Length: 390
Image (cartoon, rainbow, N blue to C red; front, side, top):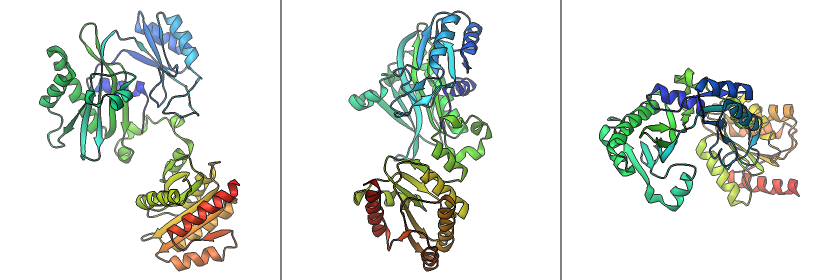
């Protein structure tokens, strides 16, 4: 789960990481009042959307006076901010962060995340921080430093000191960096984060290390332990179908294809997408209904798939283990009737009570194409999707 910069900045402050003074505002007038409360300028006004690259897209502006801050906020609020991360649909800006502008002498990058291959939390840092950090990673990977953190020892002072040396920090700056790094690591562990990032980590004219930007993502699977994290969720920033899927406890990720997939099990879902690609088709989504799907879940899954205008065919691929195929089949029939499914529907059932499930589908009177196996289902789905498109 992602949160806004102003929320992440508050967390940073709570864990001893220095951030610029700032306040969030939902109107231009509030932005002007926020600037006045901060004292003399200059100020920076930042669009609060869940995306990087805001500056290049016009979502970051500078102002010298509270009146100018109010005017600049008015330009940003309500705008459709389009970045590489938002895609062409963009995000509507509903809130800005007004903060003191930092006098930046040097910029660095630092983050903590989980490295699945190493099975460790890692610290990633670079002396080439700022808006072009992605380009630095591509073109000059030697400037990106990575350090594994032992889960039993945590981030040690020695490791933070070593990273400070790699970044070329001076003695006083390294001392600050050690404290900052330990604060970030405590935040990461105690709040069950999946990402904590500062870009840029600024050194100002007086040698102070300041998190000029703040980014925090939480592990969705740990939200049940942190009601305070869940309270920061901004549903307006989430993809509508993914948000709807979360209400049914479905794992859904939208893609760009035209074949809707409903599958039980993440591994089978990935295999289904692969075989659709191999047959010349393109999956419209990843959708795992889980191992204990109910008729309600199945209906919810169908509704989500049908809400995607790109979907020209739906391929249901179920391997029943704990889940009974007859229950799934009944759910499919109920959902197809209730939602008046117009696109072709291909269903493959295998496993527990598969024959009973196939009988329910065959006797439903609905236009459902049965598949013998996964490959047969993928081929039929790809063919039907092409016919609809034609």
